[in-house]
Length: 257
Picture 1 (cartoon, rainbow, N blue to C red):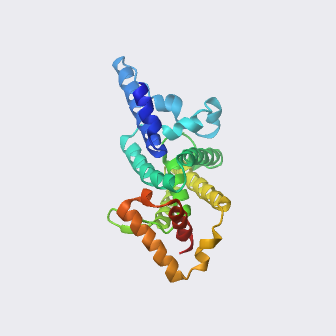
Picture 2: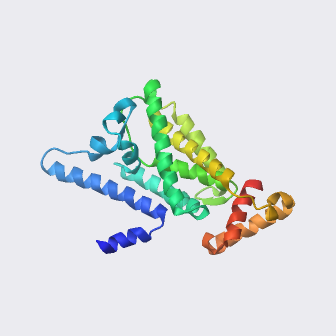
Picture 3: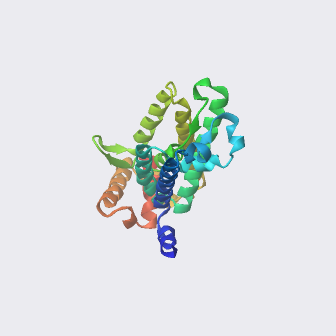
């Protein structure tokens, strides 16, 4: 057990969040299997961990946290964890593990609050339970897109795509989903995206300006050349190969080029 604890502590924050989500999924499946042997299958998720709609949260206030680590469908979990791993690792490199974890929690809470509000005033979002890391993950996606909007990702079937277009497409898809049968969940997704965008904008406003190397003092061609050089270095050697100054420049140039 001490060795397992040590391994978890040495993980980066994003991987730790992934492990927690998978552990909860396995726990729910185990409880369901064990109780089914006695003839009464217990769904731990809906019984205690999922977030109820409307004022149901008053009966289990802890669910505003537990729901964002809860999955009962394997593919739902796999999809969320892939997005969390890709964007969480990237955002963690721009900021820190602690801030990534706090953003995950803030995004989950932001999604939950919009879900609860929507279920109180909008019949299409009323009833049922909310579960899954989608809102929390969407906060990290939005914050990453706001931090480095022009950073490119190599996406399957699509090729090289700027992060900002990934975030915008995600927002449009969830917006269209508001007219469907799962409107409450899409509200939570949008709440997560909004939380991540606000989080990144606040962080950006607090970031010190490096006037000596400001992109505004470079010609557009020079700024583009410098950004391309940094991105090529990331692709060749990984983000960790950048110096602290190069990391700050990458973020600054991503906003201005």
